[in-house]
Length: 186
Image 1 (cartoon, one colour):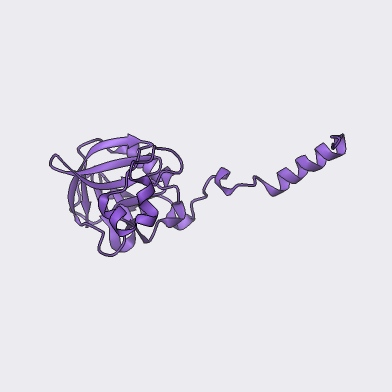
Image 2 (cartoon, helix red, strand yellow):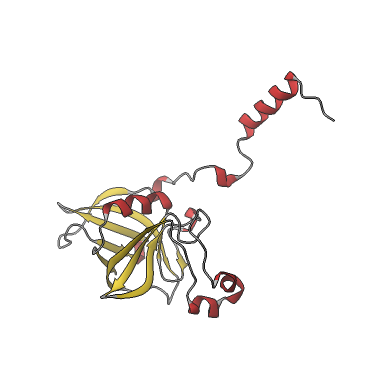
């Protein structure tokens, strides 16, 4: 049995302070400067209070009055799974549950079959902290603008069709956009 003395306590405390937490997951993600949200000028012709996704630049724009927009860096669907079009946000959910689509399970059963019954919301859920559900009329398209537990995966073609954002960014966007917001995936 080890005796805990003052020296052991101080040495252990100092080592903990120097090395930091053992698990990276306990450390907040530091957004690289090139991925930080920022206000940008946009071309004429875009009305305020809309979302536009530019897949060539991995950017989502929340348009503001006066020819401005908030630009967020995003991940998009892999080749063949990005679906340009005009949608509406019909549902907003904090810490959403997730169920892979039948096509996802069919394409990669080794990854998705175990989640066929769904996964509750939480920090390890693929939809991250928030989700905006994209509809055409009254039909859920199964496309989402959502957060991710893997923030380093933005700025690339990585998803099964959804637009993926850093959790801090989707939390900000979630507060800005109401249901009914027009979304254009270019």
